[in-house]
Every structure is written in structure tokens, then in C-alpha cells.
Length: 74
Length: 272
Image (tube, rainbow over all chains, first blue to last red; front, top):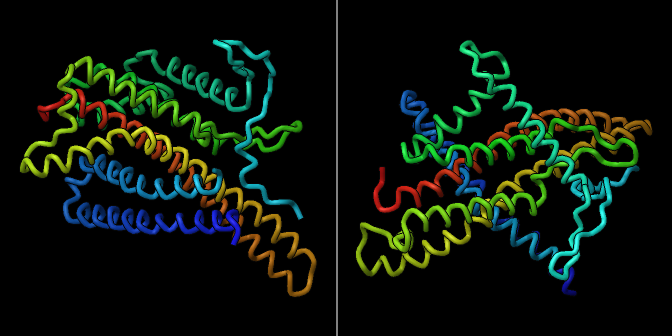
């Protein structure tokens, strides 16, 4: 197998890190929705933490994207 | 069949060529590219919007209501609840970054002029890593400078977690340090990745509309391709709505993270 092909396969494999980010986002929004339906009056003021959690969870997926881009373009 | 080139929309090309500027032995090309033009246009839109919104009428009109609700989004739901009353001086900084990112994100979705006059006019400045990295480094350096000015060398307490056994502190301090210094990377890559990914997906589905439609026109069993073409068109419309949501949300997330990072150094050692 030549190096170029291995790089492309590696870049494709690196995107699997997004599985974790997707599961994390699902857990995050699912739990927020569950809590918000149980106690709607408290939901509004906790929405900032929802978005911050979303940003931090997404950054794990972004690391996978960085690795994929690094493999493809370096 | 037209070639599918989803990355073509992110190419930078010169609109007005300027002679390179020599500075310290290096030649810097300061030509007006499509990226620069869109950023200037974004600045113009922001100035026009906020300029006409700041009339200060007692009964606000449409534009003024828009400007006030945008400002209240940053002041009322972000900076004041997170930083507290010490946060007032940082509202202009966070608001400026929020507006710039918001308008640049929105322009990529709304100003879909396409290919006119031999040039591509649809361009998202925030889908360029150079732009988002500049904003992220600006935020990071501001946090560092504000932290050292306000706390002096006490700034290093940021890496020294409280409320855990001494042995754990030695384990956690390097982790805290890494997570601090990786912030500009995640901040820039988040915005860049979201904008790039969304536009590439939209472009690919849009190319399916044309490609499957051409297959469908050839008759026979291939007529079913028209169904796929229609489904792709519906998908493009749905993705456009999703992109609008993502454009606003990512601008908000960028501002929220900038606020949280500022909060850590402004209220260092004493949670408000």
C-alpha cells in the first residue's frame, strides 16, 4: 500500500471520532429536553450551559476533523 | 455532466490587485480579495445597522428593536449572568466579535449570488481558517492580557485547581494547562468546521439536483432520477434553514465561550 492511499484511509478513519461527538450531543440535548419538560420554569436560565456544553462536546469532534485535515493536507 | 467541486466555493481570488508592500524584508500581498471584500461589506452592514439602531427613540422602531434585542442577547443573557457586574467593560468586545461573526456567517447563506461575471460571489469569510484563527487568537490574547493586568502573577492560580487533595492537584494542573492553551485551536476550528462542513454538504446536495435531474431526463427507467432530484432539492431547502440556525448559533457560541474565558480571569479566585 502506498503512503498516499494510507493517508486517505487514515483521514477517513479519523472522522470516526465524530461518532463520539454525535452520541455526546444526543445525550446532552436529550437530557436537557428531559429536564426542561420536567421543570419548564428553570429551563430558560440553564440554556447558556446547554450551548456551552454543546460547544465543548463539539470540540471533541473538531479534534477528529483536525486530525483528518492534517492527514489529508500534510 | 457538471463536475462536482464542493471546495471550489472557498477559493480566494483577487478582485483588485495592489502592489505588494515590503515590510522587514518580506513582501506582503495586500490585494483586495473576495474574502477582504466580504469582510469589508460585513463591517459596512454592521455599521449601518447599529448606526441606524442607536437613535435612542423612546418607542423603538423596527431597526432599533433589532439592535436592542441583539445587544440584550449579549448583555442580558450572556455577559451579566456569567461575569456579573464586573463584566460591563467587556460587553463592547464580546458584542463586536458576536456581530462580526454573525454577519459574516449569515452572508454566506443569504448572499447567494452564485457565479456572475466570471467570478464566484458567494463566499463565507468564516469558512476560512485564517479569519477564524485571527478572531480566536485575538480573544485568547485579550484574555491573557486582561488576566495579567487584573491579577498580576496570581494569574497562574488559574492552573491550580481548588477543592481536591494535593496529589490530585499535581495531576490536574498539567491537564488544566493543556486545556487552556488548546482554546484558540478549538475556538477557531469550531467556527471554521461548522461553516465549511455545512456549505460543503449544501453544495453536494445541490449538485445532486442537477446530476440526478439530467439522468432522469434520459427517459425509460432512469426517469426515477427525477424523484431523487426532487428529494435533493427538498434537502437543500431544509439544509438552508439548518445553516441559518447554525450561523446564528455558532456566533452565539463564539461569544459565549469568549465570555466564559473572560470570566475565568476577571473573577479569578472568587466566584461571583
